[in-house]
Length: 81
Image 1: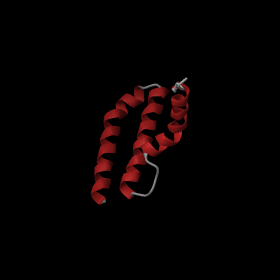
Image 2: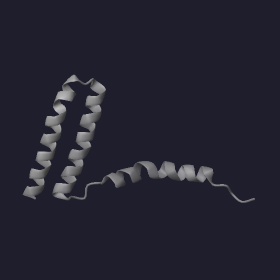
Image 3: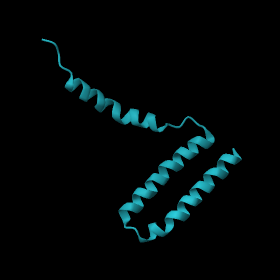
């Protein structure tokens, strides 16, 4: 587990060090998008490190998109005459 933490810390530090110059000059919208992606990756990294039963990305997508997808399929289904 210590190796996983070290690898993740190195990857986040390298990502922030390489992007910090661009983020200083960026407008607010790119900063929000960048830190949103970082927040999602931190959540997934935590899930990877401690392995709890946290919802994964596919579970969250299933919860949010299954019902609309079924509604679209029902709408497009042609009933035989």
